Length: 269
Image 1 (cartoon, rainbow, N blue to C red):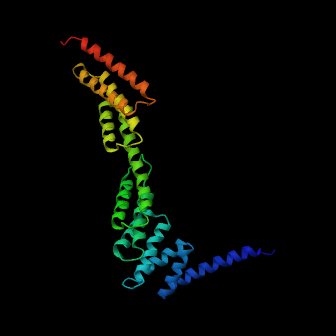
Image 2 (image 1 turned 180 degrees about the horizontal axis):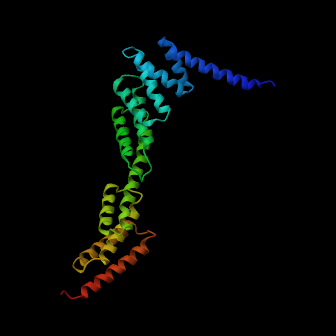
Image 3 (image 1 turned 180 degrees about the vertical axis):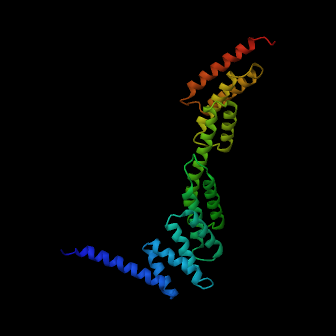
């Protein structure tokens, strides 16, 4: 039975590639090892390139080739999507070789690695904040960079994630009926994110929390808390006079004013 020609060619190429890699690993010719590593990087074939580059790091230290080897090694981690290691080596390259033609690219990619590591909003946002800080620092270091628009777009997306985490974190107090904490947390959210897309919902949540706190309050605190609830209604209604939530808000206001009237009729002991 004859082996199909295409299959034979593929096997030959694979064997040739393996043979070339083995030859490069065993070679004492630094230039040959480097050329082979670069060839694998350009394919890309990081699994073969990275062992060669790692060996070259020690072989070329102090040599003019060391800069290029360090660059490819850092980019290899990025290509393998090992963003933690890539961020370290890319950042280290940008610091070590400040005048390199690759310094700007590596500085940006080091920040971009933190962007790639940024998790869903429910999780810890350390990498999200780190990415923002690194991208902002990149633009300070390279004020004329052509990547400024890209950086600002990335930062905007990261800030939306932080904003969303803060909003849902504050709303959790309302869901668990910690009304005072809910009101304070939502007001803190509005101070931090004054132009938030969640502003309407946040202002309504403050009203909801202040209403629930007032109606469930002890008598000696009820009056001031009702007044706070009424102020929260006015703030919401002034900010969003056409809101679909306005009927709900007015129902909460009616309840507050009703509670206020009853409280005023109740004689002090």
